[in-house]
Image (cartoon, rainbow, N blue to C red; front, side, top):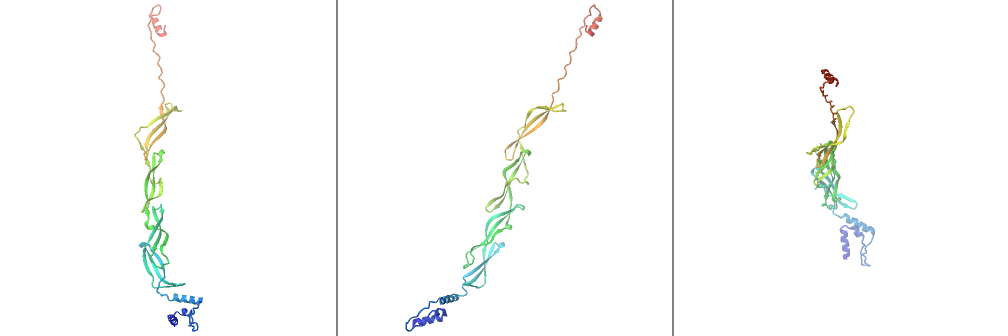
Length: 291
C-alpha cells in the first residue's frame, strides 16, 4: 500500500515520465515492476533539464573594448542560460573595467624624423568572471605601434676617429641611441656622419727637419741655380693623442758657384841700363824694346 502512495505522490509532482516507467500493483504477485525502456529514460532526462530555474546563469560572453586614451579596457558581460543546444540571455549586459596591459615587442626607427616608436602587444587579463567564454590574457592588438609615445633620437661621439692624414684632420665617429626604461639602446652603430665637422691635427713644438736627397741637379736654361731635392718632416698630434709625422718631398733652388776671377799678369819691371857704347839713346831703346 505504501508503494502505491509513493507512486501517486511522484505523479502529483508532474513527473509523468517517471510514472510511465512504473506499472500498477499486481495483486497476484504483490510487487511493482520497473520498465527498463530506453525512450522512457530519455524523456526523464529532458524533463530534468526543463525544471532548471530560468534565472540560473551557466554561461557568459566576454566582449572587451579598448579604451586607449584612458589606458583601460571596458568588458561587456552577458549572462546566458544554456541547456543543450538552447541558450537564452538572462538579464541585461553589464560592463566591467580592467587596466590595459602592454608587452613591449620591439621598436621601429624613423631616422628621417629622428624618432623611434614602441611596438607593443595590447591585452587585458580577466580572471574573475564565472562561466566566461574567455579568461586569462585576452589579446586586443598583436602589434600596436605607439606613435603617441615616440622616443627622440640622441647622438654621442665615441673615442674612435677616421684619420685623413693627407688633409691633417680627423673625423670622429658617433652613434645614435634612445633612452628607454631598460636603459640606453644603440640603434645606429658608430660611424662618420656628414654633419660633423672635421677636427684638425695640432702642430707640435718639435722643429721641422730637412734632409737632402741626392745631389743638386742643373736645369737647361737656368745658369744661376741648381735644384736640390729635399725631404721635410713635421710632427703633428692627432685628436686621439697619437703623433703623426708629415713628410714633404720638394725641390729647393741652390745658387750655382761662380767661376773664379781671372788672374791678372804681373807688371813688367824696367831696368835702366846704359846701352853699349854709351849714350842715352841706348837706354831709351832698352826701355822700349828690351835691349
